[in-house]
Length: 301
Image (cartoon, rainbow, N blue to C red):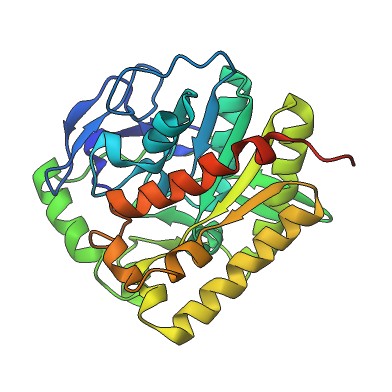
């Protein structure tokens, strides 16, 4: 989860990138946010004639721990010659990712929406506060999801930014029970409840595809611990498969990055610390670029 250096409050999403921000992350990596709130690709915009590709997701899409040009959306833009808008936001749950996709699709009319996610994003839907920030959340009412917690209240900082950043670096290392004790995360649903919410959110993405006539592609990504802990990996894979299977059953396109990373002799070397490095992101971009024509086709329903 990024420090709040490049974030601002958002009534519907909880928080979003600050338009026009230029600066450096806690590790010194450069971050540039354009006037529309997208992370820069690190170069001139692609001049493809087709409508843009919109990428949404969490810190793995935003590109935590790496520079603007090393994210997979930026590398996909260079490989494909298509404009790729990086709408990823660090720390988002799957609920916030879908809400942002709906918001940006309405505004920018993309030809394709690529939804990047990790299994933990599904668990984050169980929370009403993440990383010390309030967020929207969904209740299940009958067969429908009911959006709750909006407008998201804006919490005024109780400490200067330098102190908040230090505290965040401490809190993020604590085990979940202590994070919740200190209010860093606040749970709204019992553990495991996020699975059902996640599957219904996939239905929202299918409706989004139909409403806007843009192809929706779900891309599964993985935390570095997956390559070091077999029990953790099995749990992550099960959570991921549920989402991908539901998406496929609804006619959405899916890409699982696991096989490509698993083919590497040392998959854990494809990460900086907690996030994918430039080489790992190049693999993801190459996977997507090679299948772009196939992924763009809408199946008969």
